[in-house]
Image (tube, rainbow, N blue to C red; front, side, top):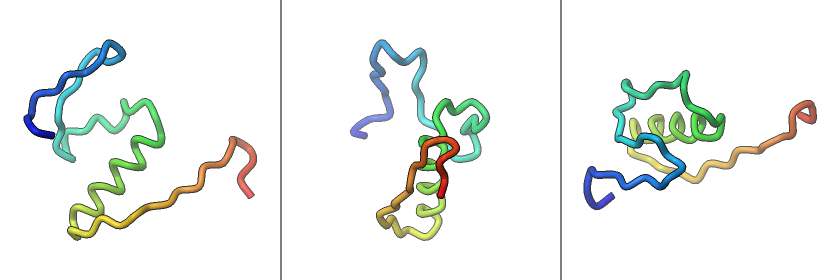
Length: 63
């Protein structure tokens, strides 16, 4: 980001930046966003940001 101001589109009611301890984890709408944020914060602690591969399975179809 070039500045701390966000310019969300019409699909967003509210947008702002959060520190890890401010994130409302129980209000995150999508499981994928939860996973990505957790991976990011884990990586930030080590300063290493590798590529992450996560398999997605249809419900009830996990091998």
